[in-house]
Image 1 (cartoon, rainbow, N blue to C red):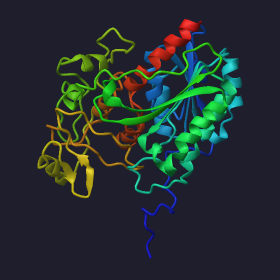
Image 2 (tube, rainbow, N blue to C red):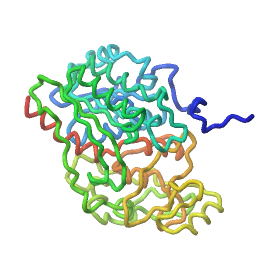
Image 3 (spheres, rainbow, N blue to C red):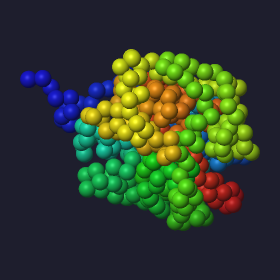
Image 4 (cartoon, rainbow, N blue to C red):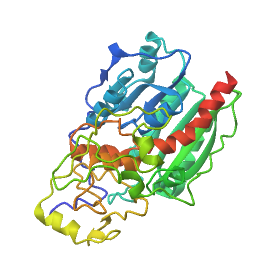
Amino acid sequence: MAENIWDNNVPVEKSAYIKDENVTFFNIDNFEFDPSGLTMLDLFCGAGGFSVGCSWAGFQPVLGIDHFSPAMKTWCYNHPKSIGCLGDIKKISADTIAKILNEKGVKHINLITAGVPCQGFSIANRKHNDNDERNFLFLEFMKYVKVFQPEYIILENVSGMRSTAGGHFEKEIKKYMESLGYDTSIKLLNAADFGVPQIRMRLLFVGVKKGAKLTIPYHFPAGKFKSHYRTVEDAISDLPELKNNEKSLKYTKPSLNEYQMLMKGELPFNIAKPSHLMNHIAPNHPPSTVKRIKETKEGEAMYSNFKQRIRLKHDLPSPTQLAGGIRPQFQFGHPSQDRGLTIRERARIQSFPDSYCFFGGIVQERVQTGNAVPPLLIYNIVQSIAEDIKKRS
């Protein structure tokens, strides 16, 4: 009998881009940091959502770790003066990382972040299994916390963690954080409440080191956009129109709103202006797919068996962008153009600035943009953390 690929007892297929065999370091010779500034480690960094959001708040991501090679290429390119580490975090000793950073002059880490792999908790995972080995990777995060003892720690995951194994993992993570000396606050947040043009629920754990003369407990900021969410149109309406398999390297319209100005680095904010338009390449759909998109109304599903694959509605935020497995097809149709989204459009919906370049080809870049935590959400979380640490100093 043929094996049922959706059976949760069948091992999850592993991407060829996951590199768990060896550990490789990048950018070591180019490493630079400001000793007077704030420092952070970005574990399970992916394409860099945490690093981008924390950088806006004044943190320097001195090192990132991930085992997905296209994401590490993206992270290292966009953080050329930071050390990238490609490999299985279970094989990367926190003491070794501490030694490397110490030799580079980094004597203290202020913040450790981790976007722990969420597939085991996600309701979008049709092979959901409480015993999925990915559910236990938060323990690797704890090893780094124990060695570096930063003032703040942040762990992020999908909302599904709350219900997995009857809430066991949420309770265990809080217990571990507190056992290491951190007062821990937990909250389920919607990225749309913080100006991200996407309905994306994320569970955040924020730990504050006890006895560090910091604000305890940590208070989550209130979302300022609850009554007026940014929409898909707000996010992407200034980008050049494309037909199937077309690309553009130039902007053809001015920014039409504050969000687009922010993404292009046109506001007084810690975002660089891009030299040209990057990652704006339309998928190469077969004619039947173009026809299917064309015949689908905004907000409706393009496939009867996959209700989450819709043609986006221009006047609403995007639903949650997904990574889509190891060979993801396009998830969303453009609201007015008969094609799937470009990577730049996906990046805009996630609040990555236009100066941030993604690598790996459209399929692996979909994985990266789907897995990432929205930088604008993280900025709103860590801005007060940066101020708190500076105030103490």
